[in-house]
Image: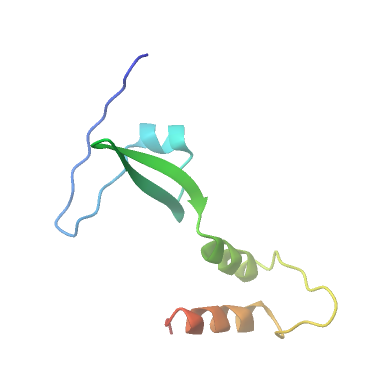
Length: 90
């Protein structure tokens, strides 16, 4: 089994730029959630997809969710406000 390695630096705000090669292999795009897994002293990174709430907000903002029947909320913007309030955002 061939092992590939790459390096990345941590900046002063603890951020790491994921190398392009790794992003492409794992399918990581903006707002993608990744998981850090420790197994027997070794750490791994796993792509787990976009956060479902972020995806819902994104779809509401783009108007991709169609209302069916009587809506609980008047429109996507109202839904986004409710979601942000739930998360403590303004």
